[in-house]
Length: 205
Image (cartoon, rainbow, N blue to C red; front, side):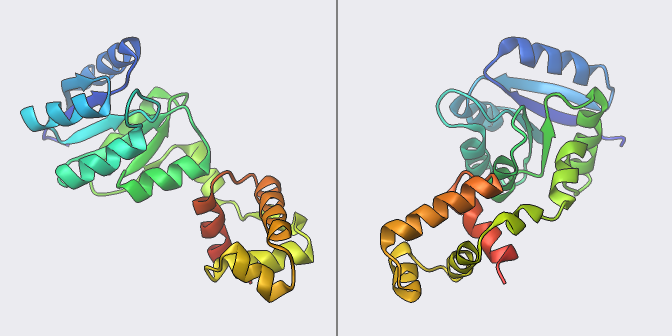
């Protein structure tokens, strides 16, 4: 790539930013034009500087990186956002991509991953660290652990039904449906309701 990519680093740890700056500026195709320790400061820097790509952490003071990504895509739709995080849960990845991120790199990934990720994103692609890509490619075999009743509840969740509607359809109490939901999330390693709904839509039969 012949054009210099202008990068804004967003991380609330100055030492992390220093390390990233040193690594990136060792490459002639990258220029770190600004740094920020939080979302508000990052938005101010983006308004002040010419930025092509934001390298965004998730855990920050104030708005987290996912919220900040959504703010960036609203305020600066032309700026690409690449998440750099220690979190490897697919729920975070899904939320980040939905917020508008173009990729997700793990902080413990090899240093070359960041270079490849930036160039991939700036070429119009989407990039995931290898460990995340393997998880995304794996079928969710955990759903075999679900009971027949839990599969029924999952199908109703996929239809967008509330706990009260599911309880009525299956002749159960609302509390029993809530318990089934908790058990499903525990067995599948799912934390949030949004991820549960996505899984239900994709896998319920």
